[in-house]
Amino acid sequence: MADEKKMGERTKAASDFIKGDTDSAVFLGNPHIDNLMTIVIAMGAEIWSDRQRMRIVEHLLSTKGKVTTEMIEQYVPTNEQKAAWAAERDAMAKRVYSVMARDTSGAKPFGEERKFN
Image (cartoon, rainbow, N blue to C red; front, side):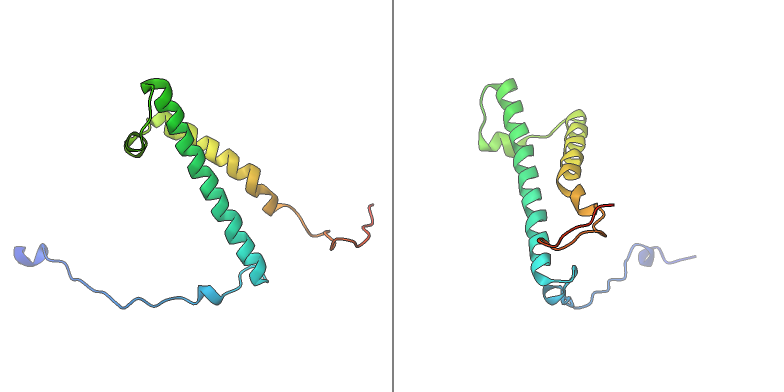
């Protein structure tokens, strides 16, 4: 039979953090395009967080008649609100970012004549 004392103990293992080289990596073929993508994604996240906070402010105003920073920070959404926000977030992401999935195989640099079939 196993020693009960040892069964409750966990072996702990840790290793030093090894920083990746992602700061100098190029993912999209051009570091400037990588920087622009980082900006676009960060701006989308900022817009969404502001929009979600505005929904909380609107809800508090309509139900409590007043809003404080503390009320906003302590607000816990209902399951229905969470589902509605998730649907709204997904719709926003689709509107904003779906252009990145478009077919650009026939794209030409600006100024070049395009031939249409």
